Image 1: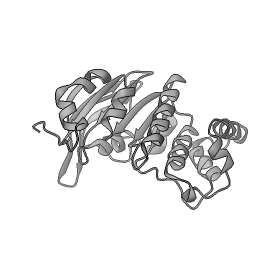
Image 2: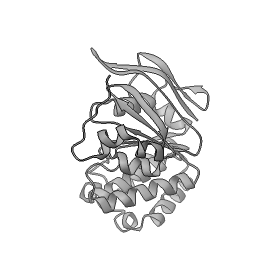
Image 3: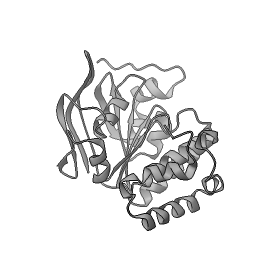
Amino acid sequence: MLTVKSLHAHYGNIHALKGVSLHVRSGEIVALIGANGAGKTTLVHSICGLLKPTKGSILFEDNDLTRLPPETIVRRGISLVPEGRQIFATLSVEANLEMGAFIHRKDRAGLRRDMDRLLERFPVLRQRRRQLAGTLSGGEQQMLAICRALMARPRFLLLDEPSMGLAPLIVREIFDIIQELRGEGRTILLIEQNARAALQIADRGYVLETGKIVLQGEGRELLAHREVQRAYLGKGAKPIWDA
């Protein structure tokens, strides 16, 4: 469904991605793990059109996205749940959901049905639908960010660090939601520093170090891999692959 081929990206003189290649099949959860500064968010922004790669290609259902603007990519069926949630704090929960459905704004009846369905699924958001989003708890804000992305009716969902800053019980709840979304037929690329949580639910995974993919495999294989355990799953572990 998604194929990234030999992707390079720069921030000025900083070479952030150095020939990254990966693929995500329809219906999969694929985890991308790596330390801070590895290039995970750079890859996400490249896929979403927020950063233009300097070399390589991004194909979605065999269509080239590499030079398309973000709004066109959303229309093609890709939604992003961004790092740090980035909700509209001064708008209500309901208004945040409406913003997520911007590309469907002319379909008022469909927008209302989508919103009602999501609020039924997430009762805590239904209770707070008129509350300012900035007053929600961290877990509630993450649920709102996911629902806002779903309002665009995506087939492919990018989640960038959804567990960031959340308590372990809330992380478990968020990852249960991610599995449910896959069960509904969505394809998911999950970008995470919490390698254990990500690989436990992923069909496959990639390890990104200093802008390069250094390891890939099935989720359970990577969980058991000695280098992954040493670098990401052990207390105080540090990345150890050579660049």
